[in-house]
Length: 307
Ligand SMILES: Cc1cc2nc3c(=O)[nH]c(=O)nc-3n(C[C@H](O)[C@H](O)[C@H](O)COP(=O)(O)O)c2cc1C
Image 1 (cartoon, rainbow, N blue to C red):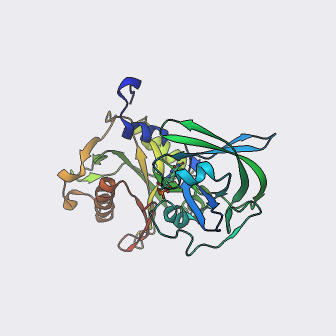
Image 2 (image 1 turned 90 degrees about the horizontal axis):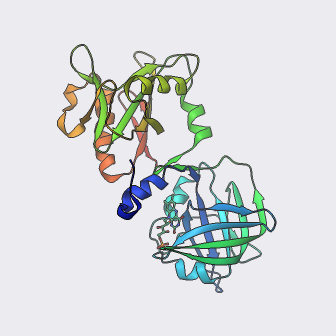
Image 3 (image 1 turned 180 degrees about the vertical axis):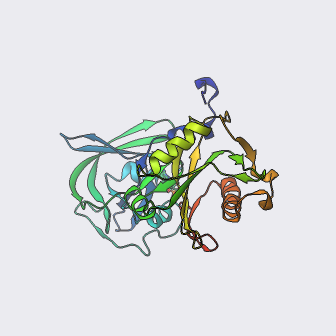
């Protein structure tokens, strides 16, 4: 979608910014009384090697804005892939976000969180006014890199590339399907009995990426996968089914059609597991908060990606 700068829709601008994959950090500082403060931020960027500088952008509406723009010191904690819960804790209102967190104060009076991928202990170099945000540039006084795989963030959801892909895309009998979504509509295709099904393909030797590319070429060449939405084994057929949530820039389907999930009943689907997955998608897309399903074809659990 193209937007004229004079008529920018903030929601769509935010979605477009979300096309940039990032990691997730928790930015921390402490008052003179030692009370720790922190918030989740994915606007972190490295800036300079010599001198060692980095930056993070903070919203002026944040309750932390005043403190972070004046405190003179802060730390960046880069989250590891198992630390989604921390990210959510530090993005939600709370009297004490540090209550259940393992942390200690650095030499510069900044909270350093345990088991992160890396941390940077900084003094504030500059604060730059920037619209409804301010850029806080930090001078790195000390840092540590633990080497854990980082937690990713992309189009409003977390991803854990190293772990999830390795865990679920394995074994000889794997079928991938694409939930190519546009708002409340999903690209579906009909089987010979006129029941709805998702575009899907059995994975060959080349793996899930190739199978997805073939699905996109056949149904919606401009679609792209955002993250794995569901992974389950069918204990009867012994196939593993992996569904990727995908986005498309428009509803121009080469094959199949974009159908509003409000308009079709679960009995109109070829497969009960797909019907229940898409019912979950219908509900979650209204809240813009997605989970991932693990289990078999009849029962399993949904773990939140972001909640
Ligand atoms: C993944 C993610 C990234 C975020 N990135 C930023 C950011 O870069 N800058 C920012 O000011 N807020 C960011 N936020 C929002 C803040 O974490 C959150 O709104 C803020 O902590 C609200 O509480 P506060 O008013 O106590 O700061 C992000 C939230 C999430 C979940």
